[in-house]
Structure formats: C-alpha cells, structure tokens
Length: 241
Length: 390
Image 1 (tube, rainbow over the protein chains, first blue to last red):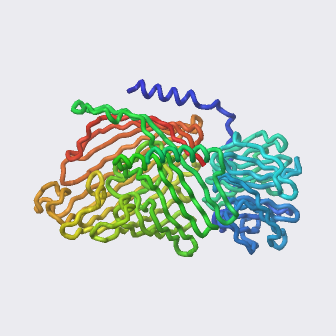
Image 2: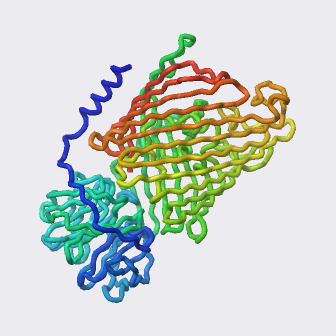
Image 3: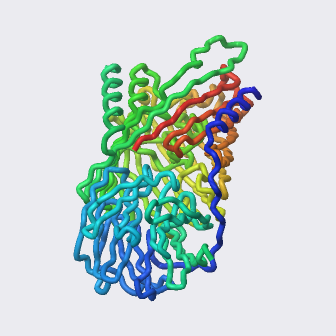
C-alpha cells in the first residue's frame, strides 16, 4: 500500500516543472465599492480625470476616479471584456461577438464596429485591448487556451500573432504604462510587466484580489485593479517604486 | 451499431481536434467541445468472492458537447457520451453516465427569472451539480451519484441570481423518473416531481467547483439548501418502468417520497472543503413494498428513512500542479435495517494542463457495510487520464 503511494508521489513530482521566479506579493492602498455589476475592464481617460469601465452584461460607463457613474453609453453589447481609450475614441471588445466597438470619447456614440474572426472557445476569446506605443500597434489578447496576442494596425486588422501561453494561465486585462506593456492574470492573480517589443516578462507581482479583470494606471502612477466578482476597485502604489 | 458509433466518434474526434471550436455570426454562436477519459481499475476482493471482472481498463467518457447562444437571450446545449451509449447497449446502465447528458433550451429574456426546458441536471445537491471534470475523483460519493435520487430529468426549471450572484435560487417540475424519463412516458401515476434549491455565498459568488485552483486570497463560503417531493402512488396492478427505481429501489417510490438536504463549502489559499447531508423519507403505499423489508406496520409506522453525509477536504499544491483530496461518507440506505455503511476515499490528481488534462488516482476503502447492502470487495484503486478539448 505504502509503496503505491510513494510511487505515485514520485511519478507526479518527477513530472512537475522547474520552479519559476515567484512574483512579489503586494497589497492595495485602498479599495472602493462600485455600483457597476460584473465590471470586466477599466482604462483611464487621457486627461486622467475619469475612468471608462465595461461590464460582462454589455455596458460602457464613464466614471470619476472613485468609480461613481458619470455617463453610460446608449449601447447594449454582448459580453464586453476589454476597453481602451485614446484622445479620440473608446475601444470596447466584445468577447461573445468577436467585435471591437469604437465610440466617440465625448458623446460615447458607437461610430465604428469591426468584426475579428476567432474560433476559440466562447469564454476563452478576446479579453483585453490596449495600444502598444513601442510598436505603434493595437494589441488584442485572448483569455486562454491559448493566450494569443494579436497586433492590429490602425484599421484594427490583424497583422501579427504571438502565443503568450507561457506567461500565465490566463490573461484578463492589458495596459500600456511607462513604455511597457502590463498584463493581468485572473487565475494566477498576478500582474506582469512585459517588454513591449519582445513580449518577454520582465517582472511580476502577486495581488490579493478575487477575480481581477481590469488594469490601468492613473496619472500618479498608481495601479488600479478591478475585481469582477467583488465589484471592487483597488488602488495599489506603483509596484516598481 | 456499436461499431458504427465508435467509428463516427473517432472520425469526429479527429476532425474537431484540428478544426474550429466555435462558429459565430456575431449574434449566434455555436461552440463544440468534449472530453475523453479512461482508467484502469483494480479491486481487492473479500475472501468470499473470486470474481475479478472489475479488474479492467474502462473508457469512462467520450463526450461531445454542442452549446449555443443567441445573443444573451437564448442558450441551448446538447451533450452526448458515446462511451455510455455503447455501454448501455450492453444493458449496463450507469445512472451517473446515462449517455444523453444534456438536451435543453434556456430563455434568459425575462427580468425575473430564466426558464430552462428539456433534459438536464436538476437543482439538487451541490456535489451532483459540480461538473465532473473539475473534481479529483473518478466516481462521485455513493449518495450523490444517482442511485438514491435522480440527478437528471426532463422538465422545466426557473432560476435566478441575486445580490451580485451571491444568491441563486432554482425550482422546477420534472417527470420524476430521472434518466428513464428519456423513454418518453411517465409512470402510471402520471404525477411529477417538484425540486427546489437556494444557495448563498459570501463574500462573492461561488461557482460549483471543489478545488481552489486559484489560491483565493480571501476566505469564501457557500451554503445551500434543497428539497424535492414526488407522489408516485401507482394505480392497482401497475408498476414503474424497468430501471426507474434504481440500484437501491428508491429513486422513485410507489407512494410519496420527500428528500431534503443542505451543503456548505469553503475555499481559501488552495484549501477547500465541502460537506453535504441528505435525508430521504419514503412512504410506500403497499405494506408488502420491498422497502419495508418485510417488517410489520407496527414497526415501520408506514415509512422508511434514508440518508447520510459526505465530507471532503482538498488542497491544490500549485507549484506541483497537484490536487490532494480526501472524502469520507456515511450512508444509511434504510433505517429499518441495521447498520450504516462508511467509505473513505482519498484521491490525487496531477494537472498536465489545468483541468483540461489530468492524471487522476482514486483509492476506495469500505470501512463499514450496511446489512442490506453487502459488498464483495474491500478496497479499490483507479488510475487514468482525463482530457477535455475545446
């Protein structure tokens, strides 16, 4: 009997991978309850004074920095999972429909929609979008099985595909900050700082947040993490400081 | 027929492993997924038995699932297990693996509740509702694996989530014959079964999962209560369809049957646990019903009771991608008989690719037996591979 147990443990242990460098644990400065149900991603207005938040149930909101709703787009999407904003537009990714909706930043009217075919799992598809200034490309990421990073041109058409499955078990958000790409892993509850040209992980931090789905940075360099299940917005100090 | 099913399965599996898994036009999405698993089983028999027919390899699952969504209004699902269809052709019907696993349509367009119509799992028992592929085990606990109450049935279910999905309620009416309902007819009583369940979780919603593979940083709890009732008094001279009463003869009772139970679950930093308890009260209408065990009315008082509990603890060793579980269950099949059975079952699973690809090992140990349910083996070992593709 004992021999069987020992054999099994040895077998299983032998198959385990070499240990990676463990991410550093960080704790939030504060957290805010927000009234948006099932929030799934967040980004900050270029002026740094408001936030854009999307939800699983298909809505786009503009809020103040405390998460209080200022405006809601006249729009009902299908499983919004990613949001990115520049000086002119807000870009919303719908995981279900495989569409990117483009909204005017002032009026929040949807003036352009692009369909990007993807045949992966319904709930493992497009999950994050941001703009990679280092390569002058939008980046669109799938959640898992596998984690693809698609580079998109200015017309939101795919021009490149990179498999990032080795970084994390899944990816739930992306942001560009301080000349680096930052990724968020929901299942591993980890933030990754990534080289924007090679997509190699440079550093990582473990966050004590249940179901983290959104990631952005404010003008002071604080890192904002959004929890879907808990409906909470967490403020962390910049983990590099 | 069996050969044709195998051939079609192999062709489809081969096709889908290299092809798209979702098809969508932006509003309507069809997703194709599936799973395959096989294990080797070895039993240590009692000295009184010499039948080693369970020392064997077994194809447990060869499932294909087609799920559809039309916007966020309609959902439908068709799930079939070809391994079970083939096994059922031989006359060995396993209630845990009935062949057709899901065939339903759900409407989510109403404000107050969602409506599901068709054949699927009924809202009773957290353990029963937990998808099998997310567990460490090769077999569910005896009480919740479909021998004492139906796990699937044809009917209508109303459900709704509240308070950020921390509270979920579901209630439905079903044929009451479980997997046998797929034959098409009700029993001669013509009566349905009513089932309801409510669960609450804190501090966030708690999915029906047993393993804390995320190492949740805050303690999470869930509690559920459920109940079911059926009045299946058969007219004189009538009998239930063959197989409807199940292995222990109590899945449906010629009379009234109440069942109720509760469950609690927690998870924190890789540790997780579940406890589940059920009580069944049956009131067979005939005094010579086998469930009365031949005892006089003065002794039975016109009813029998059954029930028990299952307690399980798990830990996910993240660095080694390994899950360790231990389960203890106590079962009283019939309180009119002496004794209760007790089983202990630890299990180990190594994740090759998360829950999608796992090597699983389960050990079974019969600690005690109930007098009316003698078992011919003492220990059992089961090891195998599980693969989910999507």
